[in-house]
Picture (cartoon, rainbow, N blue to C red):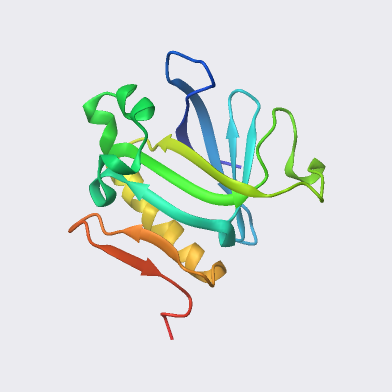
Length: 159
């Protein structure tokens, strides 16, 4: 299992500094879910149909990111920054998705991360848009990197 290498960003409650975790993103064979395995032993499981928004500086501007995240990054890192919003279970250390309690309440989740380079970020954006369009009937809100205009990808729009 190879996967894509990324850096997950986190501002823990009360932390004064941005935390960075080496991580790998894996796409499951059925193309319905991604998992983000972090070096701090936290695994984040995301159903592609549960992704609601995908933000990046080039398309959404700095206002789409909290100051705590932006302040902890060098200017050159902003071109690699992504924000992924989805509905799911909060991740817990040492727990695989299969161990999650079925009755647990799913809530809005956000993951901030850096791709390895700006080109990799663009490839991931395009790939996720296509995969999410296959699984998400509500549509995925993204922005075009080239002109900053918002566009919605939806399986209903591709008829």
